[in-house]
Length: 119
Image 1 (cartoon, rainbow, N blue to C red):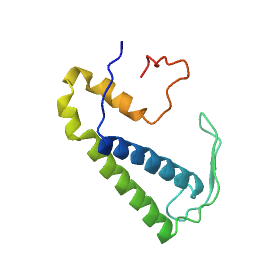
Image 2 (cartoon, one colour; image 1 turned 90 degrees about the horizontal axis):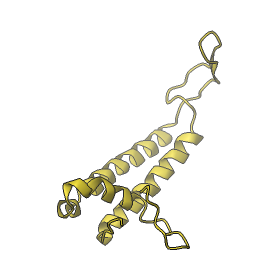
Image 3 (cartoon, rainbow, N blue to C red; image 1 turned 120 degrees about the vertical axis):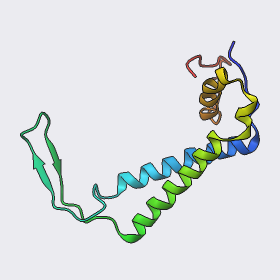
Image 4 (cartoon, rainbow, N blue to C red; image 1 turned 45 degrees about the horizontal axis):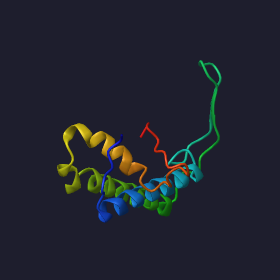
């Protein structure tokens, strides 16, 4: 049977915010042009796979600032979650499993009550 963890509320909140910040950063990066700086488009059909990019207008200063803000917050949260005092109470051999459980703690458990053994 898998170990259950009584995660502190601040650790759960930090992990949930980390998920949100990463999702927001990912969505923002998908919307932005492929290059931070303005660059001409290119096409390389001679390699092992075809690579094409349209011209990039680059990112605006506001877009660059938003990406930097989200990356900084992501880093702060990752340090908070991974360095939380809770992990000192978990046996070293169980920390990886505990961390995986924390990453999925926000998910609703299956309706049949069975827990996913994959973590």
